Image 1 (tube, rainbow, N blue to C red):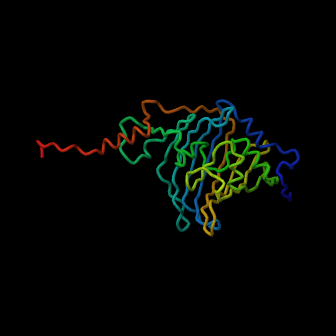
Image 2 (image 1 turned 30 degrees about the horizontal axis):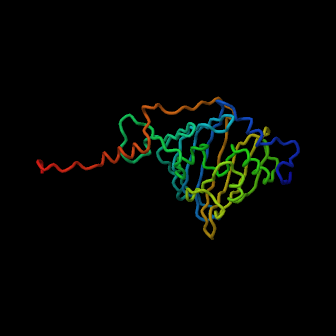
Image 3 (image 1 turned 120 degrees about the horizontal axis):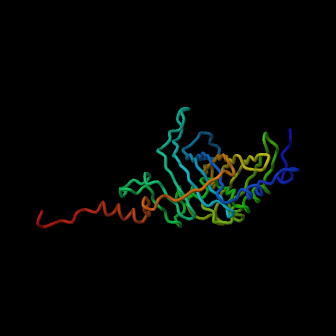
Length: 277
């Protein structure tokens, strides 16, 4: 049996996943994603908690991900060995900086013909918005070359069937330092800073060409005896598939602010008329 080595780059002749991923950044190409995320209280918990299921596609370009089209479901906590119950599906489309949620998620009235709600770009911390960045809730952004290189540098690796397995751990502060973009804490929706406590552990499987096939992370936030834990399991297929994701038709879209105003108007009571009372 082959022993693990560290750093991962020490595997003689092994392809570099960071470089291989970069080669996938081509116009009108993409990848398919399937992910299950579970939430727990206490890092020793082995009972599956509630979670989220994601299934979708991510469009790439030389600059990285530029669009996403995915469906997500809430998952209930399994009881007595029974599988989780799935909520109604929620579809999300992201094209550039614009994110569109299917209108069926909105609990209030929606104008006739409006099937999509466009969210403001600065709205961070909302689950839909966070997922839309990469059709995923993974704390490790594989499409960020600097973060990916840091993850591999801090990994031990060993040969497995079909490729290599990389394992490692980084603190929130370390992840924040190597990230090109601001990292948002999943527990608060706020940027991670020097005072943020937490760490992310990972297992990344890559095929013989260095392309990621599966990523499992354990994201442990805060401290104490019962920390909040998020476990995400993502599978990647059809790397390099032809993919073009477009925004919904404009006449089917309403901005979130306009929708809130519409709902307010629908709920405004009729003014009292002295002649009719």
